[in-house]
Image 1 (cartoon, rainbow, N blue to C red):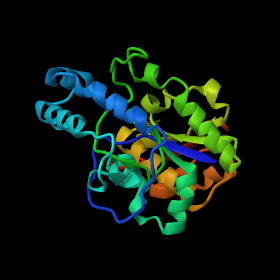
Image 2: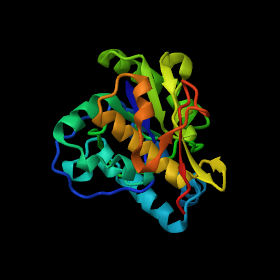
Image 3: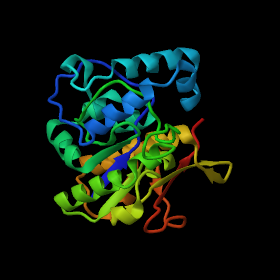
Image 4: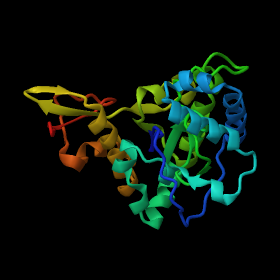
Length: 256
């Protein structure tokens, strides 16, 4: 099966001694970076609801974004993102064989790069998929990407011989995947915190759990969707009463 996750706003730009690969949509990333570069500082701040300092940082990133960057400006995607999901994924601790399997079965959806493999080389950026960045293709990034991510995921699913995609991405990012073009069975795990007998999603914990689920798929080389029910990282347990085949629910006591 394939598993997809979202990127992160926060980056870890530590040097990594690993061989990197070329993103499939590298030319699109350059094109979008050029578009974002033309925004004023205020326009960029408004586009992503940034503080003045973050707006300046990302203005500089888009200004420096290169068509042919040197190695010093690049980092492998799964190791460069540093948000909650990536704490759960903990890609740096995957061994060589696990990372090789992840390279074929794990994908990161990206507002700038479309779809990334774990070892794809990225330049520093921030561009949320929900951003209303106007391009010749439309008023936002969903218009820009259209069915490109879905077709890329479907092609990779065919390459590894699966018809199942485990969606561990946020609604914002998975919304960029055209389900008609995808033509795969989609399974979306849900992670709930049981607080005072009322189970609900807590974003911080859910993001980390989605990363941990992606790690679980990678480390166990999962091919059978039913095996997802054995996931128990972080104290979560499968809840059959609330689950459906396409929406397995995992529950744990609330931890404040």
